[in-house]
Image (tube, rainbow, N blue to C red):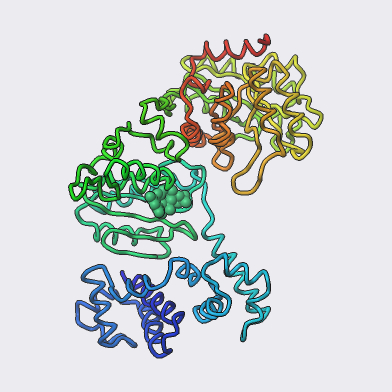
Length: 571
Ligand code: DGT
Ligand code: CA
Ligand code: CA
């Protein structure tokens, strides 16, 4: 059903016209038609086919013609003209609930409000409330509208975006004849958060694919639907843009829409200096098209090697590509084990046997079961005797799963005074000791971490900054000192792959590498399926330019334990 799209287009036309001061009669004509069509049970396409468009209340000849134009061509000239007659910033303002086109126009005329930031400013300085017909209450409601709008626009974690993209792609593949389909934008670059999801499709039947896309089951709002671009809201707030292109420009479009913008701007600058033009349709010398089917074309015409998406942030990757000196980035297939997972002994759900079997299915060679220590009461941390019992259990389970090494481990709390939650005699009996701050993390975090790293048994520092992407900044930390100590003591820093942590971040992990520190990418699994989080951590590592040698859980078990023993002996 295209009812909702047509209704949304008429509503938008009404908003913009009203903003521009069009006479109420015309504005209301669009609004009324929008309401009726939006609520109509019958499919507007059926109504149109049967020649009954003008029987819809509020739809006369003029509107019927516009609906027909849209249903036959996928475009509505009036809509495009009206929307392009104001800036994108103003269109955004008109999206804000409780503001309304009249008030937006007033604020624009009297106070020069052109965008959301201007609007916030005139609310803050009280000038909006002083306009005729305004007042505290109205302004308060507009403020609420802004908050709602911003929450809806907030970024989502890559850990939420990836499975959603996979689902949307699978659905579209089952419904349409797409030739190729893949994520672009920040999702493809594995950025830790994603503003909106971008998907690219190769097809000869763009309009058809877009229609299927905007009517997928999860779609709650249609923002746009044309021949080459569709845009929707999935669930309560996630925007997904889909672009459909032909075979001849698929590569160029993939490159363009993968971004980042900074990377693209830099590339296009080089192209211009070489008398070339690159856009989403292809690579051109004058009028002649010299590439665009393959993504690599875009790089090769500039004498660059193809650059992995995760590196495309204009952080020096283009210069390296020009010298063919790009790092050989780590891949998921290089990972030989997971060094930080929880079992049912503490707050995990899975048994150690189940963890071992799942890990083996992922072709891992080892897994370190690191349950919480005794002070982590909220997580059923283990008392010393329990640690010893667990070690015994692992010995028994190990006999049944000979082809994967189960390492006994602990995630030991770093206490308020910087000491560890277990004495060295216990730590010495564990294969892998991961240390972390979980409590009182506002207090002397740096000193506590430095002290913990001095302990020869502490092999890995877990989620070093403690940030939670959705709600917490992280410990108040002098990261430079932590890095120095890690380098000096041979302590491994973790890239924790839990989607809300991704800690260390890409930037911090790259800095760690530059300081000669080794990293470990761990899933911090609490239930079996979370072992898959490893791919998010690998994404962070690739964005940090890490190679297999930088990441200890790409090593053989022997090499890994040798490194651990070096730290224990002190280097
Ligand atoms: P996001 O959605 O904020 O997480 O980040 P992106 O990178 O997905 O950005 P988005 O969705 O606005 O645009 C997707 C890609 O399209 C972006 O990475 C690069 C390309 N792009 C967008 N706007 C521009 C532009 O003004 N110039 C150039 N050269 N490329 C652009
Ligand atoms: Ca995006
Ligand atoms: Ca986008």
